[in-house]
Image 1 (cartoon, one colour):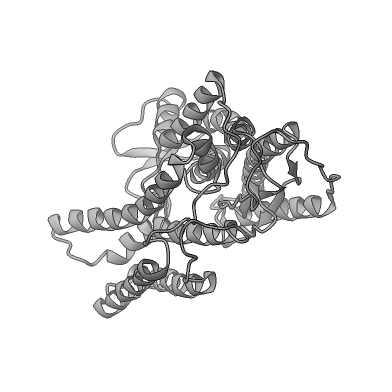
Image 2 (cartoon, helix red, strand yellow):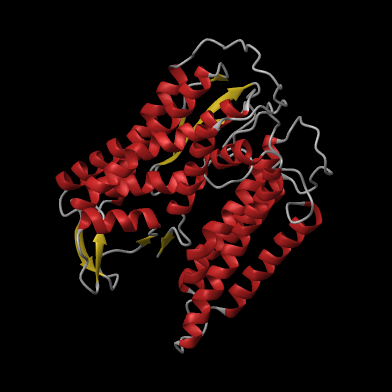
Length: 399
């Protein structure tokens, strides 16, 4: 995903891609800095080692040799998708003479189930036109999907069926519409009570589609925010606030739906820890995108008052909630979970008072030229955003 010089993020992470200076209205020539590559190459090698080592560590293979082979397959497939995504952005930026760096890959062994937090591209200067904005924003996700979709099709054809009772593994992956279609076409019929245990290639492709879903969320400087702004213009600024707050709604609706199902089944609140953890992704990303919004607007004049809720305050509030939720996964202690929700209430009260739950401009996109994109690019923008809908997972990973 593209990133400004001030970004430190992608998300699978996701991504901060600000252009701190407003874009010009014309396609003025931009001096493109010479390409440097040594640090990028070093980070890429470190990421290869991180991804491979993480997959070996997490392998449930019967033998070391099988675990090494599986880890190698995942590493090659996952990094091929990431490379396609990032170089899609890079080449589109270079074509439009927007100064962009080579990708910086982010290794994260063990802590990330994939062994990486993705990659970012630093973009120095403004994106001058809507055409350039769309091309740069859409090229990464579409290039990545050009590899992820056929790799998933191949991987699901080489996956095997396991009982649906959870005895074969400790987690369940989300099933977006796109993977359900690919499962049906390339995986064949699934007997009742069975599900697929993904092959390493299919798991890598799923991870690539998961990261793409995050990047296509139409908020701020994410890829989806770029594409939506190219399509909708200033209307996207208000839509981004709604999209961001929907993440918080997803968290509460997810927890409530799980608990309601348990209450109807007579299970009470004994599994509240499991349900909070399965829904926590949306709360974390609600806060992560707020932090990215603060970073991306530094140095810009905003229409609304500046935030009073700092990045450090958000981190100090969020991290204990995440660790306490992880500890409380298998604990139904009323005291623990009352304390957890009180802490969440305090965080949200701070967001109302000085953060993203009040009127703000953190997700306002830098302006670009006003000339129309043309019918072809409008279609590309719509198709790109439709992929977000096809990849959307209400619960990406459940334990």
